[in-house]
Length: 88
Image (tube, rainbow, N blue to C red):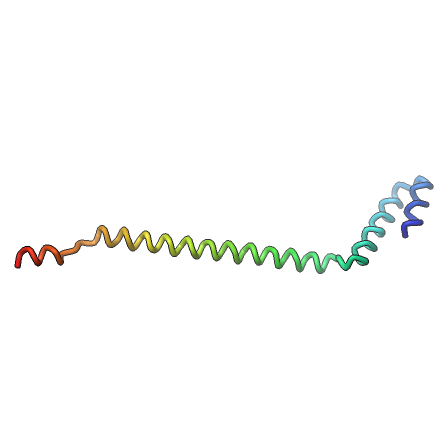
């Protein structure tokens, strides 16, 4: 395929040159085991991993916020246990 690319370039065929370069790229991808299907699968796995990490981070943040809310609730909740002892 490389021979055709050189021949097209030498002949001055600009339109065919693009087509031959694309075919050459396709051959390289097939030779390396790289194609659109595997690349899309990789992107999907990468996207899923990012979503999983984000969900995990948000879950941890929610836990921290719940703990802080419970602390604030306990501070504002009226505690009468000390008051009973002083009156008794």
